[in-house]
Amino acid sequence: MKKTFFQVEGLRVEAGGFQLQDISFSLHKKEYTMILGPTGCGKTMLLETLAGLRKPIMGQIFLNNTNITTWSPEARCFGFAYQDSLLYPFLNVEENILFGASAQKRHKEVEIRKRLNRITEAMGISHLLQRVPRLLSGGEKQRVSLARAILCSPPVLLLDEPLSALDPQTRHAMQALLHELHHSEGLGIIHVTHDFNEALQLGTQLIVMNQGKIVQQGEPLNVFHQPRSLFVAEFLRSENIIKGKIENINGILWFSDRENEWVLGPLYEKLRTDANQKEVYLMIHAGQIEVSLREDTPLHNLNTWNACVQKVMIHSTHVEMICKGSRYWHVALSCNEWQRLDLKVGSRVNLSVNMKHIHIIED
Amino acid sequence: MMGLISYSDLSTLFNILKQVEFHFALKFTLWTSLVATIFATIIALPCAYILSRYKLPGRVFLDTMLDMPIVLPPLISGIALLIFFGPVLGDHLAQAGIKIVFTPLGVIIAQCFIATPYAIKTFKQAFASIDQRMENIARTLGFSPPNVFLKVTLPLAKNGIIAGIMMAWTRALGEFGATAMLAGITRMKTETLSVAVFLNMSIGDIKFAISTAIVMLFIAFVLLIILKILLRNEVSV
Image (cartoon, rainbow over all chains, first blue to last red; front, top):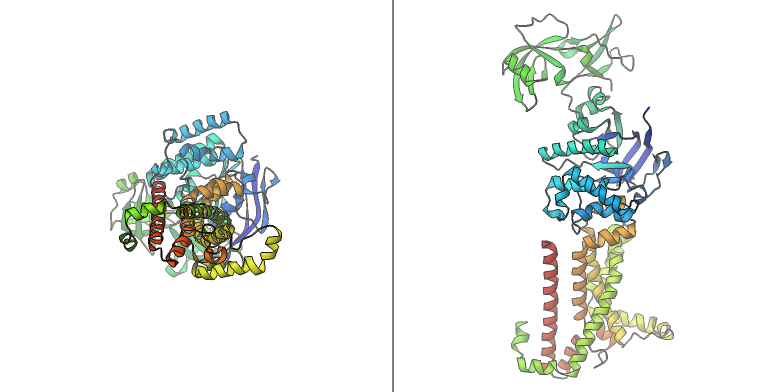
């Protein structure tokens, strides 16, 4: 069983009329927690509170079962890196990285030097040590900022959108670096982002926030496939969300979109409440919709419907299509599948879905 | 500047530079203005930091009070200082063996009083321009708030602080009104360069006054040049 080493209970923080409310979560050793949410939902405020830079008006923070709620930031010594690397312009790269070591004095100088060499080598910045920050690129600055944050082996590393200001190529390289650091350093990491793909790639736990509250938390893939609210589904860019009702026909539950007389079922998913006639949302990810040419598969199967390709968008990893049936459907195919089916604008297709892949949002 | 320079000649200027009264005024101005600038810096640093960082109740009132010496005519400031260190506090200070009115100490206090608001204004701007997250990072790296101030805030505000010190110093160098009221206009005792210009103009020694004024211009010009070079070097490092 995993051991919880960092725990937040019922945290409430207030600043400038904004409130973080009832924030509770825990972090296991070596866990990578991603906090996801729209701009202004309180992510940075939460990280600053965890670091001790803001005082909560309620709630507690525990580190290794010790209540650290009232500890100052310098007593906690959590590693912290902001979106803009915030290197000290009056110090060179080496001095920036060693800055914390001079204050903490927890390690011997020889140890610190060894660690400096190892970390800068791993991050590919060992050749930049004598440079001043203004001569570094965005990616290099962010690496230095990370090296500064982890040099003294902080118990928790807090990252506030550290990759969002970087170009896609550098961001990708930094994601790989963070992934590697997480494993090699064995750090507990809390990483704030608004990029869901980043959260999926890096996180072992995902927390979704909105308006100062945690709206859902769990394993990233679970949250992605089973959002608990319309907000989470929309924020995670779930493409096909349909408003409708649950119908109980002879004890079997069906989803019906009465407006278009479109019925899907039977539903496998366990619903939280007595759902008959209840207004719900049905969610199908674009990648879960199967596409076949209409002439290949006559329309006789349950949960299959007609559509016509309206738009084709080719991405580097997949092909996205918008198809029009009784409504517009977002469909994602692998490049191979798209080429095999030879789909173009105007192609007539059948769309179908396996009921195991749909999700009902009850909120 | 052109007017002053065109009304003087080099031989008179060099003659006056050799006079004892000029030497006294120059040395007296330099050391009093330096001491006044040091005190102004010591007072201005915490004031500016607190005003830029903390939302104190009555901050606008306090800020305005600190700006008053800038908008008041120095003569009025001088009268206020004279009354404060004379009738109000004079006896108590005298008992403690401190004499301010009509003494060199009065010169320093008047210069400091006039120069401090300029230092506060510049320092405040320098502190306010610092991204507070830089200080936050230092706290998470293990620095206590006083250490953050010394190791992060001051180095980051260095340009503004140097500019503020130079501004305060140039203001103290040229101070006349408040100094005249508090320290008096006594030849070879409380005679700063400004006072020397006034004294010699009033007795009709225009050449001495103009030469002194040119020296003051030169000093201010050199100081401002040094300031600009320092700031430019800092930017291009």
